Length: 102
Image (cartoon, rainbow, N blue to C red):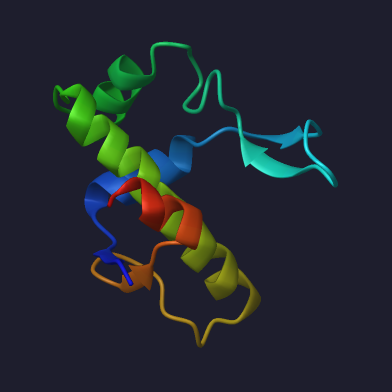
């Protein structure tokens, strides 16, 4: 079980995350815009601009994968304020995201 701690980078990226509806699988679902997840197609450049520093591809990919846990925790918090959310909060990666980090 991979646990991450919400960082300032995660919160900054969350504020810029673009969502859309993906219908290419069985039921479809809400998904991050996979071509322009932060507004433009230069994903690493966008991420670096958002967090205020240059990111290498590996760091950008890790932050992007970790963002799945941050989004999930933010939604849970929005529905139930008793669920903690914010800087430093620990949250669990969803299983597909967790597999990518193995």
